[in-house]
Image (cartoon, rainbow, N blue to C red; front, side, top):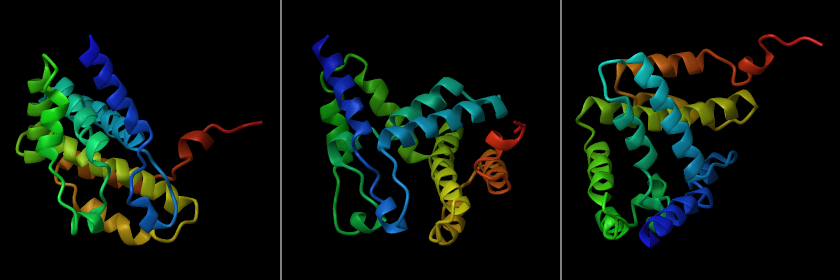
Length: 183
């Protein structure tokens, strides 16, 4: 059970690691765990919209896609120009003591390859999580999201992902809260 406890503590570390790209936005803050939760929930929704996929696999990919960052940290696109991360080594060390380690490795590899329907949707969910954050920042008065939103939305490849992105952009971030407001 010691490897399980260590895995759980390692995954818990993702709550403490802040995503680095927000420094360039000038506002906003999000941990890797918060991002992974939102991405996984988006995948749950996608699995209900696109019935021809393996929903459990889709959500597992989303949940696991950034776990190497517990060991490597979160590098934004500028940092990636100057830093080389050995994600395969991080994954190898993570899964070595685990009986189900190969399952983790194969899901992360499938996500990174982006060839299966589930991987494409999970990659779109990864971007949609960022779109949600950017839209909220834009709706609350931040200026830089207007430059980033078209770039991030442009990364979305699936029809399901594009439909969700369009709906996000047409909706105020707090509309769900104020829909039936009364005193």
